[in-house]
Length: 282
Figure 1 (cartoon, helix red, strand yellow):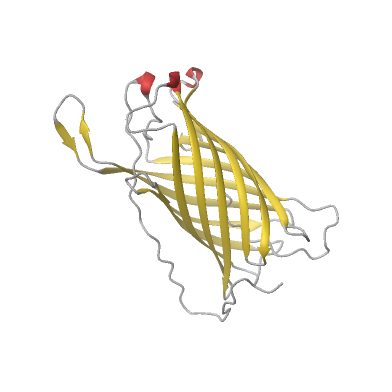
Figure 2: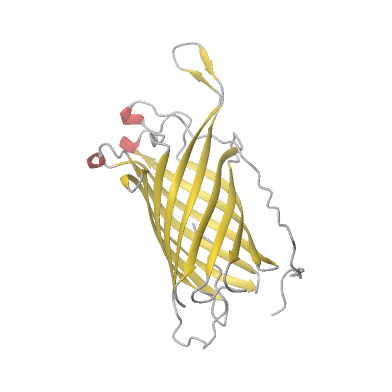
């Protein structure tokens, strides 16, 4: 199939990936009955991600399913989980569209018995372009989200909303180390940067920077460990009852990411399936 964008694959000595560092607004915590998810208390947390991927078949249809858990500290104080999946269609060899749906639950790790602080249901439309540059493979991912949230006691916190839209752009790169392309036994490096935009304002909401290493164990299983830094930008606001004005600020969190991807083999699998590039589905 003809490539959607004809691009040069000549090796280059240096590849510079320039990413926008963004600002954003997530509301501060308020009284317990009106609390949005509490900001992390520790500088290091962890994410555990398990993903099953069905590559696009002869007719282009594929999909994925993912489970994710996040903790406030390294592998403990879990407070957040995701259940999500999507159906994809390969328009061309390097252009894929996807429709996704997910459930996202945030709790107070100090008292999980009280249930969720925020329960979000999300639908998104995603457009992905891949681009080879020598041995490196780039991915440009655009995502448009529709988000509906329920809060504890059904009380909407200040500066929050039951419905919010959001747009995201992510630039990823994967470099196989001991083979020219991804195949069983290949070790690789992976990096990305992602910007989150809120159309209601403040427009720059969040930035994620990611750097990891992994290995494709066999035709089906890929494992990866990584560092992920997430920055949330807090809006300038008036402090209730004091007449004081709080300037815009930010909170950040470093995370250890442990991920396993299982590539589902189709019933009529080819002897030599198309190479699988381990971009994070998250």
